Image (cartoon, rainbow, N blue to C red; front, side, top):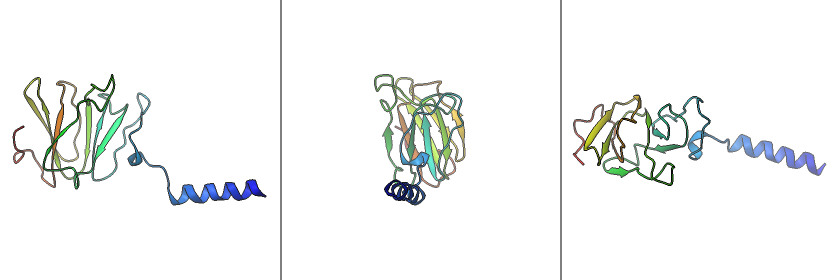
Length: 135
């Protein structure tokens, strides 16, 4: 009887608080489909939208340059190689070593491994990167 009650409590807890991709950055197996919650900008460790994922809410992470070097392995020096902009906001990446910018329009999904981008800027509810200040 005790085992049945514990099982029912576990089922109720999972129904009330389901696990989602947005609840944490997780490692995804190579080749798995990327996921990115609505109204979120997701950057990925690998160029095919796999590996460790870091998510940003444009509503709370806009209007300033965000340092993104060191959030991915190896040894905390890795930079993202792909982005899924599942928001209504433009995102601009900047590489300090290459002095290069890369704009991703709202809804864009791109591999960005051509430069080691180490900063990102989210232009909240803006369709392009024209209004983003230079780094």
